[in-house]
Length: 333
Image (cartoon, rainbow, N blue to C red):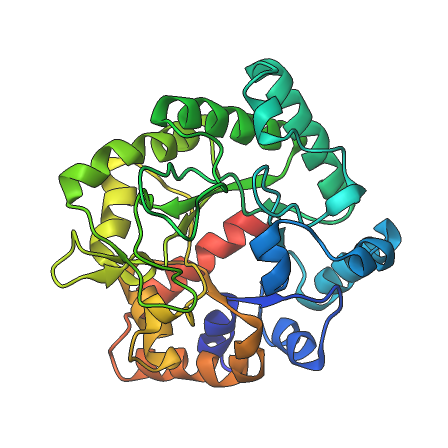
């Protein structure tokens, strides 16, 4: 295998809803893949509750076995999952409990941070080293996607809790992720299945950057981009493929860590494009790690080769691919 192709594999971030490595994922990790996201199914995501059979079957020992297998195949690797207070906690009863949203607002920041640290230490013991949390969005109007799934209903409250969450995770010795940049205070639909827009100007969006800035200042290791189309851009573009929004994150918010897309095969991100085209577009825009839903797992080899071909044809600078892969390496140590 060429070094270029191995670099391409290292930027892909497939999701699996199973606590197991399929043949496709085993091959992916063997060929240069450096990250895997253990996700939840659609019903679990919608309700925030893991299936009873999963709670029974997914023992701590099974988690340790699977995460160990990931590293046997890939070496240093990112093993990631959601650990959200108001949405999905993928490790369900296997860690110290997360506070509820109401508890988070009543226990004080020091106690909140302590509880986050306890949860994150347990996650680390199971082999997890990247949490795709906390949610830094603040809902300010119509929002069929994130209503009820955020830390707070006001910017200041969200900023305080985001900072405390990041500090707690950092004290546990693993990485945290702020999502979904640059914030989605209002959205017209569900971006996974609809062409959903955030119909705000950039000036209207700017106040909602505050929780992200607070998390970055607290030491967040990664930022997760929104899949939605932002009308503040001309033409409207998904947050996951927008050079302008990634520059905002890098320059104005001074973020130097790992930039992660949302699922690139979400309807809002793809619109009418081919997935391979979107993967290259996201890298070119400045993203480092490219999330792909379970439906894309059979196509990981094809997508890696499309990245390789884009470099060969001059459409994607080699230095950009190397920079993305290096960011994944730094995060996975």
